Length: 226
Image (cartoon, rainbow, N blue to C red; front, side):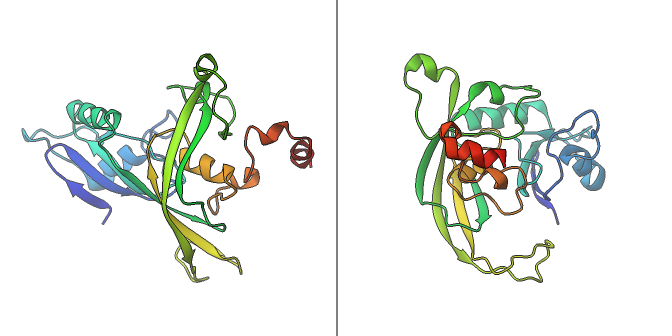
């Protein structure tokens, strides 16, 4: 069921929430490539050779479910990377919140150092700024985050849903989001900064409505100290 597409180069799988996309030393098998290879493989290249292990073409946060594109060889991985760089890949997300997300294009800023490849340590969450850097020189320490909220409307969630989620009496909203740039935790961080954190996002729900600018506010500092 979770193998959505396959051709001579690419695979598209439906990743369930909480399954890590990328392997790490502690979960080399318990990740998207490992599980796909074990449960859906073996796969074969156009030459008929067996694929040792599918390669990841992009990242999806562990807590997020949805489509993950994988390649059977390094060439397909490079082609996909080039298409992303040329902005020819369209990424759409469905996000559920308890507040309506403002429609339109949202441009925010993150610290560049926290998005560097191979970055270890640092803050687990990404605070964003709604104010552009003051100068071109200062902009070098930041990266731009852009997404577009195409649609946002109320939905109803039954208490008998398949995700063991209790919606309570709150109104919920589903938003269609087009991702323009791809940054670490981008959708989660930007929506949280707008006061619309994703439901069940234990990392960003507690900082909903907070931005880097608001951290300088005394009232906000007192709130965070509580």
